[in-house]
Image 1 (spheres, one colour):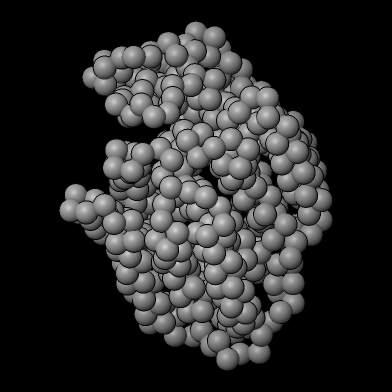
Image 2 (cartoon, one colour):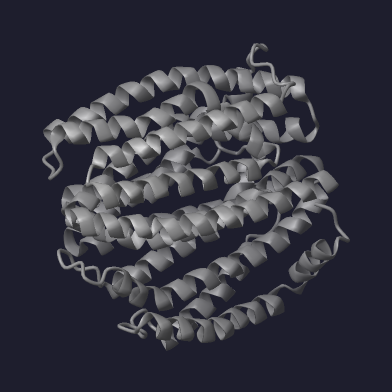
Length: 501
């Protein structure tokens, strides 16, 4: 469909622009925080940020359940039914907003007046409240429209709005840091600009989706799996955020700052990958329900190329990131940011987490949340249990080992269920891709370990990065082409326009 292809193109371009802006700015502010306030303040702020990410769980279940329910309805242009789904979602969001506000007040009191930190208690209380205001507006007014825009393939509008938010808010924060050291003013700048962005998205959606009638009879049955979805989302949040909180409790805020600095590089890359995927995810979701034969062939190509590209990215990060962190943290002496093992573990963890996204998306397309809920529960148990024990013996690295163990379990059960129960094909279709790319990853690590290029100047590191990236990427491309030529043939046909997506 031409309209779908055009939206994919706009989504991809806008996502690339947004991710470039986000990655560029995300490295600047943490460095300024370290210079102006020190590692302990940076650790406190990073911990609070992760707690707010956890609070997103309050809407995560209904958000993903609504997305899955809308794929078929929007794909078939059944707008009356879509309105009923969003009417139910709207009611849930309003109830959730009240709960969210109550939890925020508790968190503000606990971190400001009970847990000892180096930040003034009243200031920390206001920082927490200002963090919460944009999310409250989203719950009561805007969040349901964001879901609709993503399912409808208008992710590019959201990307442009996020790009504006990042540029404007970071410019404001930097200006405040240059003129004053007020943490409250820094957070206030972000709060105001975030509200402006949310108001824009609200009016855009109201104008674009005139057919949407939130007074329609709510279809609560359509989002009945929201509690099962919540379990899956909780598992994802445990993976993404538990490490920081456990380290802050079992170690100290300086250790949290070390983890946070390493995580900046990997989380920005993860955002980049998921941003690209979300650009066309709506098309695959609709295709799953409307043209299963085309979906199966397209997904085979997507899975092969995606895992290959993900392995290339994290192989290069494993080889070249440590010297980059050494450059980034030079002059910061209140904590030791030089840890080769931590880089390798981060690379393996993110490789597993991002590499399973395609096969995990099958569960979302099929709406198989309830049947796989136990998988998510066991993943959380494994993650938290091993992390707590391993942190006691290994510190920061122990937290990541716990997450890796949980990811291995979840990947195995997801590969089984998605292939056997939904796609009705052999598990080996996925495993062969992982085995081949895993072998290349191990081969490169044997040649260049994470500290091979340590203590290099930036220009010399850049030159080595360009040279070695060519042959590493070429090796991955050759292995995957020999492994699955049909996937590359399908990809080439899609590129040439012989197949419409």
